Length: 518
Ligand SMILES: [Zn+2]
Image 1: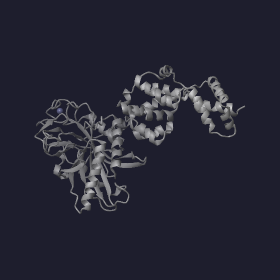
Image 2: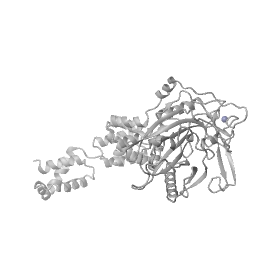
Image 3: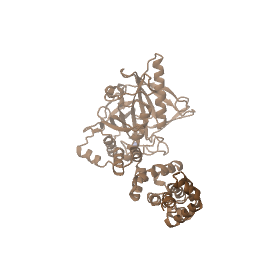
Image 4: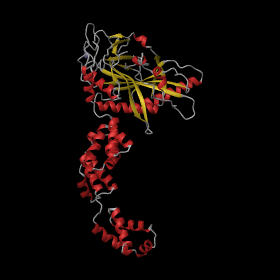
């Protein structure tokens, strides 16, 4: 259920879709305050699993290989072949379902979803229908203002991906205007998990926050590379608008959003289109729509299939899957620490503010980096500030992953140690960090080479302060008369004399001693 050829699938079936949750809608409009429309959004997310082999055959799961080189009679749908369920795919799907707090069905079966399209050689997709693997979970999503929004998960089920059509000759790469189309079956039969949410989302921002956090969760489970550009994470949205208190409006399905930005822009455009139509007295037709990022417009792909159009029936070639409690508990025990739990732990153990904890929990390598630095420095707040500040900024600009960062946690921790013991000011620390990132060298050798380092030697500074106070009797007298501002003048003089390397706190103490202390 992943290509233009397929419809909304089981999301339109007996248990899901906007119609299922009229009572659970949390309210809230999508637009400016005071406008009379509210938006209801439910998402369907497809995750390609990173198993070694396909869902029902032994072909390798790959990306970017020459077309039609990872195929066999089973995934090509030749007559007389028998599919065999990939055990790893069941384990991965169970992991996702458990991480979303779903109940795991004790008995689940596959169905055939029948439709004809050139990327589907069997003319049916093996999917799940009324007995999905996971049911009734939720994900608590942190919104941009820090509030939590619980988004219900209707179902999590397993299915196989279709092949990929390449439309050639046209400018857009879409079927309209193409001279001919080619099909690559390498992707056909790749295991997919479909996650269907309740229609608990009411703005494009919330949809984006949900997808971002779901992506991070699935990534941390180690079951998919969740690469949106390569299509291993794809998102469809069911959208409708209504006046508050009214029954749900007719929904449309916005297909195949392949980036967070397109999801946001596509939703905005579709909400706008639906409101405009309704305000003009038109009716919304239940249909599948496509958002074109180039024009910013939404267009109809086709009228929407109903579940009965697919003539679902149980797949006769595959046995039911019965996951016993022991299996489920074994998978649950193997789950890594999930972002929500890690955020709580980072706040509790290190005293980090919620926002910092959420950022570090959402990005596993960065969170691990932070914990390694904090363990050495013993100052978690400062370590978090550096990891989320200078280090993240450097990674963004350089385009490097945390793993490839030339400054490893012990090296950053060593530099922070120099800031903590007063050898470096915070500002000098930034300079040293930049040099470390650029050269891969350690902090101490850079400090020595550049002659950096604060003057924290009391004896050396004391002499400078004494000399400057003696040389400026006028201002010194003013200070004694109570003009505190004169202190700034002295600090300036001392910094000039020491080329900015005097430890400011020490300068302050010494100045007060020399000006009034005796
Ligand atoms: Zn195959």
